Amino acid sequence: VICLATGFWMAVTTGWRESKGNVRSAVEALKRCTAADVEKLTPSQGGYDCNFSKPTSSKRVLRLEVRVEGTEHGEPLTAPLTGHSCVLHSAAVSKQLHDGMPAVPIAFSASSVDFVVSLLDDPDARIIVRGCDVSLFDTSHGRCEDQKRFGEAPDNWQDFVLTHRSAAPQGREWAASSSLREDEAILEFQECALLVGSVVTVVGELHRGADGQLTLRPFQGDDKTAFWRAKKSLREPWRTSWESGGDEKQNSRVASSPNVLKQK
Image 1 (tube, rainbow, N blue to C red):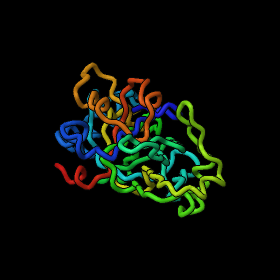
Image 2 (image 1 turned 120 degrees about the horizontal axis):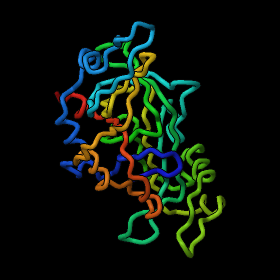
Image 3 (image 1 turned 180 degrees about the vertical axis):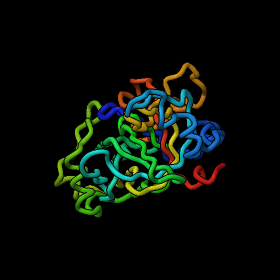
């Protein structure tokens, strides 16, 4: 699922844990990469007789355990529903129009910034990640789900609905704010965010620039395995068809589930 507004793919769905054999199982099969492995694959000292090193790449997908330190530049984002400091978020509010049919989004917003992570076994080793390259999966911390009538929702949740309206289905119009407050329909509020300070698993291709800076990027090799193709089987429940298509580029993966973190 591609979020066209920002370019990052959110692989977190209500039914994610039922999607066995996809991204999570592929990540668990990868060996955890340590700080020593990082130094071996992307040496910090090159062979040039100057202050700069030769740019290097891991040339394969790596699995790293890291802590989200904050944004590369500026202040962190604020998650629209929970108000938590984050570097990436996606939030949606949905309403069921017909019994037996999936709820449709009445409000949606997503945003990301470039951010910095540090290796758990070497906090001085900092890696820059582009927010627009990130795909979240198997998220536990940073996820919020609730069902409320509009009039019962917190003020900032109501403001989110009113200021981030989605396009109405063909032949329908969304109710005005006054009508929403009187509406007895239950709304589904969902938010997923990558929180500052969270400990996560990241997967991608590691690069070290001539200046020695590490960056994690989408894998650019020829090995288009099921690990990358697994995203096609995942969908966010609030997506409409036009929001589900588009770019097939690869992404760097991020998981905050303790079940993934504890895997060797």
